[in-house]
Length: 391
Ligand SMILES: Cc1ncc(COP(=O)(O)O)c(C=O)c1O
Image (cartoon, helix red, strand yellow):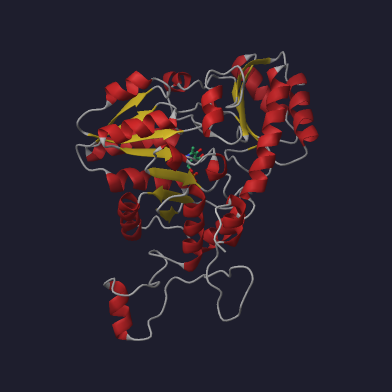
């Protein structure tokens, strides 16, 4: 049945049934696929026939995951990767060559920044970093060598919002590739294609798995760009494993319902923190006092499952607050059913210099909450007692 509805697509887009007529997609845990004849093998290798050859190239579980992601992000094409970072690196490595230039937001994940600053220059690819919301700076940073505009929205960890229509129009006008890491929003909350994005990247490790089990990533977008990424992955090996693809495809079936609850719980935690006297500053895309509120509302269906805050008392207080938490997990991941509290300055963004951290709004007392699916009363009670017991 043809449908445009997200929930139905996430559940019903499925690999063709085998002769056993199974209901749920089985796991195709095989490194390679057989050819009935030598001629069939030759035809598959030279592209005259379609079919699976080797799981580094393609696999039914990986195909199912990719097909669903394309439907949900409304993109023409897609390819899966072993991790989110593999997706980001592949995108740069496959779409750029020596001499090219990238304009990126300063507010991006620490490892994405590392790729731009410490890996790509070795291959003659340079970049300029700009404030996510400084339109003039985006325009001024473009040179004749610029090929990609790269952004994360909401950004990790301070949840800054990029104006996607502005970047989409700029990319169109200057003939650039607009590439966005859509990991925090997921396709359920935000579909960047609607705003002119050409390439959409995901760390599927986060909300797409949603249960903290497997690593994975995806690159989705215009076929001409995805084809280059596919070729790079097929030959260099950052392919998604069939097992992880099977897990991730199953996880997509519940993405919408999970995101609804993540967002509901995050909104409630935001409201609790916002009025708390021990909180200096709050970071949440749907924060009504935030200048980016209207933009976030325009681009996202809901506020997302993450809330950041600056606890009064700097790093010492932040550390004792984390140690006082009883329900929240202290771990580097996010997007899990379990609520997680993270101190980005000493963990996920610790490789950045102090100046770079501050530029991104990562102060020593900044805490990032990935609000889970436990009962909201328990989530708030835990944060409340940890604030009280960490003074
Ligand atoms: C926004 C963002 N992009 C990419 C990644 C990298 O994903 P992975 O850990 O799957 O490589 C992360 C990981 O935290 C992230 O937060």
